[in-house]
Length: 133
Ligand SMILES: Nc1ncnc2c1ncn2[C@@H]1O[C@H](COP(=O)(O)OP(=O)(O)OP(=O)(O)O)[C@@H](O)[C@H]1O
Ligand SMILES: [Mg+2]
Image 1 (tube, rainbow, N blue to C red):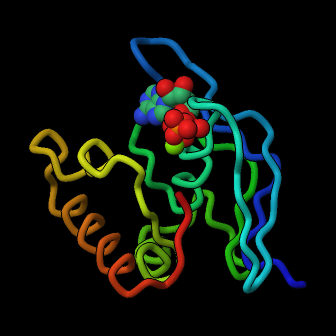
Image 2: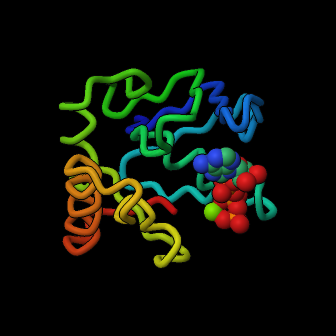
């Protein structure tokens, strides 16, 4: 089965209060076309962070290392135009806690770019084009 999503040696850290905290360390997995893959782990083990980093939705304080390819195109460091094409259209999310997960719409982050990201996310969800959570 050819992999549509390939995650290789993914590491994610956050800058917070002058410190760097590692949330994901060296994760690798792949998802084939038509395949369902479950990431299983205890709370705080980095499932959501891994999923969100596939389309660079973590914010400005994250440091993402490793490789994520979607349909053969590298997503880590991809330009915003390509990320916007994939978000909501190809990779969407069903959030477990909508009230907190939709923090990109809160006033402190209420730029037009983030509003658009939010709308695109929900649009993808409504069209039921697949999900990662
Ligand atoms: N924006 C952020 N800034 C700093 N740390 C973060 C941020 N987002 C997540 N973390 C931390 O990264 C770690 C992984 O969190 P994550 O939400 O990916 O866990 P999870 O496996 O999805 O947990 P759950 O099963 O509860 O959903 C946690 O320690 C969390 O506090
Ligand atoms: Mg989670």
